[in-house]
Amino acid sequence: MSSLYTRSKEFTRNRKSQSDSPPSSPSPIAKTLRHERLSRLDIASSSAGTSDSYGDRPSGRSTAYTRRENRLAALSSRTEDDSSRDYKKLYESALSENQKLKSKLQDAQVELVDIKSKLDKIAQQKQEKTSDRSSMLEMEKREKRALERKLSEMEEEMKVLTDLKSDNQRLKDENGALIRVISKLSK
Image (cartoon, rainbow, N blue to C red; front, side):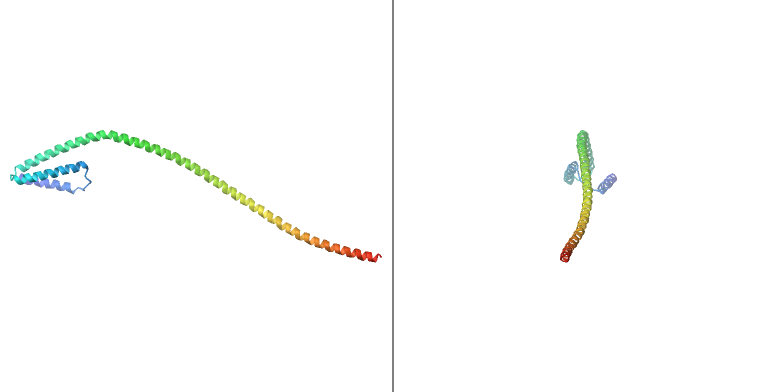
């Protein structure tokens, strides 16, 4: 009976250490194993209720453990075979995907260089236009100033001309008056 006690004590220790680990999302294989284990426990509990002898339980447990170990070994060998077969396919698909991505990256880099060059050309053209515009504006301002100066000079000349015309008219009038006076005196 002491041997049963130590086994059950070790069993509970092992179960506690397994349950202390953080839960993770079960894989489909783990789900099927869990389902099989639960169905076995149901069968074992129904058969344990019918037999009262303790001698049947350890042997049932040991056979269940060996069956479980055999099943796990078979599953691991199957997954190893499947995974070794899939590695080549996965490698080839990853390699082809990498090649596609590299070509896309190269295309994008070429396009980026092209766009940058176009952008630089446009920026240079804008600078030239703005410098042309600024030089044109400077020239227009100079021309405008020159025209304004000419206009002010012409206005001044017009004033001088009007003054000269008025002086000329006055002189004509005086000359006419003097001619009359001289002609009267000479008679």
